[in-house]
Length: 306
Image 1 (cartoon, rainbow, N blue to C red):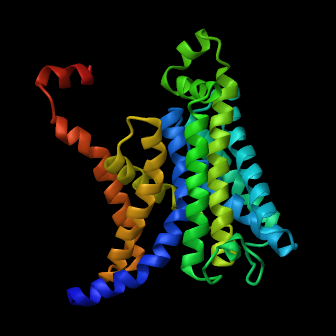
Image 2: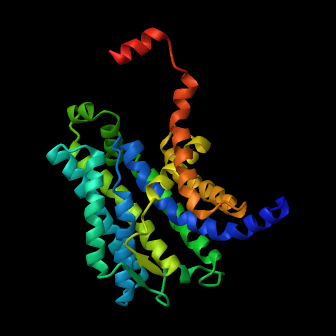
Image 3: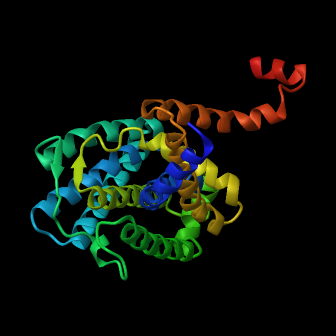
């Protein structure tokens, strides 16, 4: 395959992947908040994403408005995140294990919600039909609507994390013992923060269902590793020194990551190999700081072994 053909194929895929990346940026945001803001490694996003999609799909099939479907999906995702944080705090279960438990239980819950493994909502109204100056159903309408929602969410979160409650959540993530000594309710901050993150993941699922026209209980499979890859790319580009940079990283990273995926597909990489490539990329990004520091002096290595 020559370079011109690869470039032509890549350009043709740009609108589709751009629309997809703006929607999945909400999932990356849902991954970033627990990891970076709360220091709470969490896997609930992989279950909250299909939860939001399944709730949205059922409501659209029942004739509900697309905004109502998104709002209910957001609440469902928030409750799922709150449950994960409660399991961790109440029973002192590690955050990763608590997320795995919730993700596993959500699979059955999603099946119960839909009553089947997948549900078609083709022909139902969506929020993308309201995009101005665009034709409904085309990538441009999805780019406009998802972009507007993303900008609004970014501004609101930036303002929130500068308020007293937002600062309390950040303080709990930085040092929970010191935050508790300052009178901050660690339980409320942790449960609220993790719930907020899962709410964004569920919102991404609801938007994806309205975009693709169907809901599936397996739609979240592998979304966590994709989100981590996108987050690392975003942080490498915009940094994470300020609140605004931390909030911008998921959106920038999602756009760049899915364009890279698009380029790989245009270059002829088989789709089954994309998960392997993504995993290797995340592994490289995690190992890079250690490789830069080197193996360290012998005494330091001996101390670690002891």
